[in-house]
Image 1 (cartoon, rainbow, N blue to C red):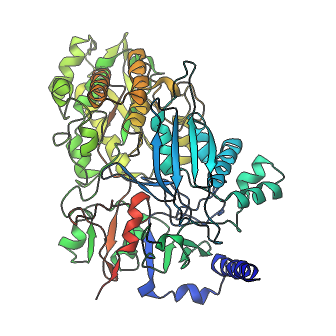
Image 2 (tube, helix red, strand yellow; image 1 turned 120 degrees about the vertical axis):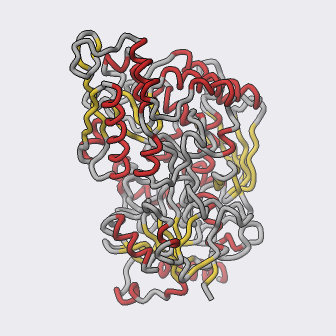
Image 3 (cartoon, rainbow, N blue to C red; image 1 turned 90 degrees about the horizontal axis):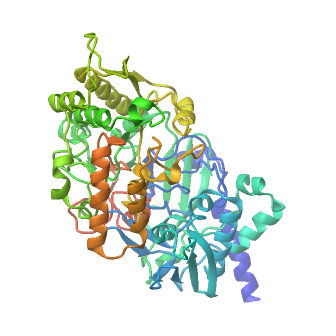
Length: 596
């Protein structure tokens, strides 16, 4: 009888916490001293709460930026991009075998679902089975690298890596990504989902998931086209001594759905937003000139942790670009990157003089992975007009008819530089690229299509509409910098339709391919440095693309008029500036304090 009553009580609690509808007055009267307000993460109304689905548009609980957003759904481990460490969440530990074909994972004893039942190996197995079957985001991302998962007992399981024709694992690095990026769902709920959808993949992917079971510290409370509100689950297992030892401080998480970035910025300035994930130009003016209680992770530029590199990709389907490395490098050498950093990024990026260009982001861990001295003569800082002209002259790419523009095979070189309309910092970057072309006698005109057009063109492997176009490679995860290097030069992506994965310029280099394939199975640090150095030499010589700036994958600005003790770069806590929500960044929620 006690067991039945406990189950009924748990179900009542779930229904109360999980309700998505209550009086609007209740939403407007969320206690300010119990509510943490966000901007810059949720755009538009939520489509679904189905963790096994797709197109949820539910960014407060279903998102993966620099570590999974684990407010409601949890992964096995949390990623910390400050040091590259994996901290246990649902899991306690993982261990690879010697030949990197399987990894054994042990779950936390304390980990439980919101209904009080334990998180088990069977949950992990079932999650992956259905991920791979319906090919949702997790299935599509990891089916090439994870063969299967087998439960050893309720708290231990083995992930078997996919093997290539030689019997070697395809890529153990991507299996490490799996540990931090794939949220685990409850097997019993998955079975319920599959049954009501009749096993139909389309129905499973599009089910609204209103009855979803969660394991995280928050759950859905209210959502409409104006705001999304999460409420803390005070029965959250993470208050066990083996995890956080307490509950997160805010009772409510609220994200108003703002019309645009300026609206979110105004709300941050007014103290209506506590945490803002938006690019704000000259953000230092908010405290230096406006004297507002707003701060960033670092007090000085670049203010945040730059993890990715928005990049200009050359389209190798265009013969003049595919056939002329000298032209590709000359344009890249001529670009005034300091102007891009000053204007497009308002100096929220280190310069290429500070962090010389390579295949690596500016973090210490990645910068230690190649021999800087070996590639020094190949690097460029930009605005080298005379050097670019000399390179073109030597290659025989000259202005033979005196009209001011260089020709190739008797025809004037005419290219375009493209990014989506309205992406103002990217548009400013493309203007600088076009100006560089003008200075060296290569005609480059800018083109700014709307996003719905842009996304269908640059992902087409056969497109010839865009000659130089912008997109960003991956930021930080356990598999980087390998994943980013593969995105820059790997042939895995050649010819793939609707390509969102990498090598958008369709560059092919067999030597680079061979080196890229060695890295995932290389464990000796010096051997890794040698491989990455060789790849960097190829990249800086061939220049299939060129990064325009370093940039945070997430912006992190906070207003401390209500809440304080957000993580900072000098506080010794090693909590990354991941907006209190992503990867190990969620640790910030447990340290927050009310002002005064």
